[in-house]
Length: 562
Image (cartoon, rainbow, N blue to C red):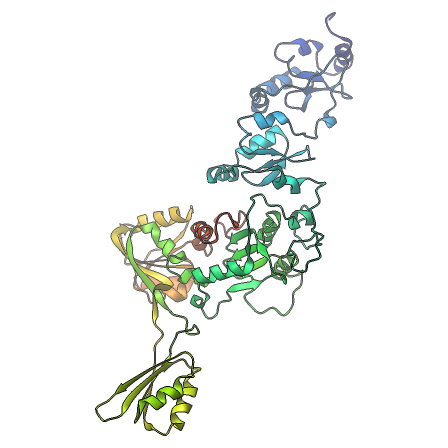
């Protein structure tokens, strides 16, 4: 006992008063001396300097703690325990608040992705996930083992992120505002905004600094590029596609977020990532809106995007119809095949160069008619002499120009009464249309079809309705696919298997009794996987250094199998 200092004697005086006491000899025992200390203000407790936790002051509890996985993990990390000099009693509440340790930046487990946040010692930044985490070693280890973090590491970490890129995380940071009075200045200003989380500040939303520096593109240029690669005339007549909302002033886009559904969580994610343009596969504005109120969740989403100068664009059924779109992507799960659209798409009737009418007329002199029709635009005129001494005139034009052509010919003195108008059919667009019917180059058993679509869509379960004419080993030669809700497209299609997102009970019954087995994968599960290859296409079209293109992390199908 003589070797114990006054601090230890103080502990013994109180600990021996209870059956669960901390014996002073424990403090110098080999098993405990490296990490055990008395606890201030509680004579029946002890403190572990390695785990920073409070313990019961009895030997069995201390032995159990020493053998626990938590204690051994902290011991293996090699982090120095808290020092307790003579006369000093450790207080737990002073240790609860974590602080950033600069040594973590040199730790090989963290150095690749960990960054320090300016003027904030309690938080840390993961540049791989672009997320803020608590500055504690156990929290960093937990974060590094998360599936989202591992996926981000595989996708690649930005090579160089300067200090200016994380200034927006500094609580004292205020974005620079250009005092130039030029009306053409498009710099964003700090303005109040409606958000879904109180954790997001207006400064974070409106900051001009970006995690990945980009040159930016004008919104109008991006929309033009989108409409060129994804023509809106391919959309179904009932659909609402294109640019649904945009800021009143010209906007330069730096960050684009892709999502299937535009939900409250997706909007909150867009605000955190300082997104300027959201491309939502499903249009958030579908039915006509009579008002915009924050009390209705869909309307609140639109209001939030408007107030934060976020544009919204929706391609929807255009992505289903285009060649190389969602339906073609679904078929890639089954190897090579010969496919064609179930419902054919046609060229744009409203576009320039489209002629929907052909007028043939017999005239006595072709030169006069040519001069009379020469002033009309979007007209193709051919004149050919016939065996009767007159001329056969053929005029190709659109519906808008046809009345003018007829009026000119009827007033011309050399025009004859013999005339004919032929309605021209719109030419089809090869490989474009709704749904796909595929003949497989190599037939596959039904159970293999199910396995491949689950693997392709990263699903553990699908719904399967087997036709009375089939078994699990039936060889499948033909497949019909339609992303989303495809019953109306697939109806009447003579394929061995139908694959879509959802169908009604009676639609499934009709299909299986007509000889087609049905695989249902849930609505958005058939669509969401296409965002990744489409994002790569957009990067090539728009330029990786011009804009950042991200896929939503929180967008998911609302239905789960439980």
